[in-house]
Image (cartoon, rainbow, N blue to C red):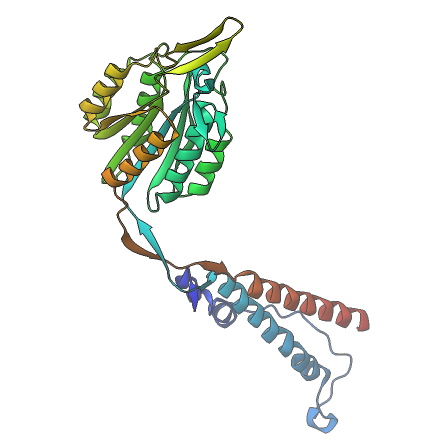
Length: 331
């Protein structure tokens, strides 16, 4: 169906008629070369012929005016209603991209991969499932910055997450967990939504930033921001060298106590991911803890149509102009 976005502009349709009715018309003075006492004996005069010839351009001009008014009303074609699911939740992901995330202690298929690669794969699938949530992405290392603002466009968030790489925020091997939480609070605190959630994934401890993680967690609790923390990294890894093999703990720098405290202060929960399978289970649990609510809303796609009447009015104006030029050349 056709919908007028500004229908009140139709009131401008009679404007040319009102001007013609109430404004005095300009009549150029003409001197007759020959005075005839009985005009009817000579048939139609030249003035009458010109008057009839001038009628059709006036009507065309008024038609062009009607088309211009119709274009100004902004006609739109409304398509069929499309159902959209809106959860009323803002969900922010904060992903550690510091140098320690380059540790290759995760396995996907038969290939050993680094922690960030595993996170990208599992978190991307999680994002694609979050129909109805507005999702944002924060990357943090020595500094924290907003990679993606809150959006319903899950494909864009996934694309930008997959483009992230180690050291994208800086070149120093440091982690600013507190700043990442503070940035999430800043972006979420003024949003009028039913639920605010931050999922923070890291493999280390806070070693940089302007605010401590616990201070940031207290601030998040004040603004009803729930934080789920994920500690990522294997507990044991075999390292081979020239002198043989030895077992090491690649997650020795992980500050689980702080991550647990952050989650408890904000009403969230702490999870530990030692491999890809555990990481997948954690994101599945997050789907259960923050279920996808579907409040049905409907969206009707709109297509603009104003350029059609505008184009026809332009063509008519060209015809009128060409006609006037032709009459002048003949006269």
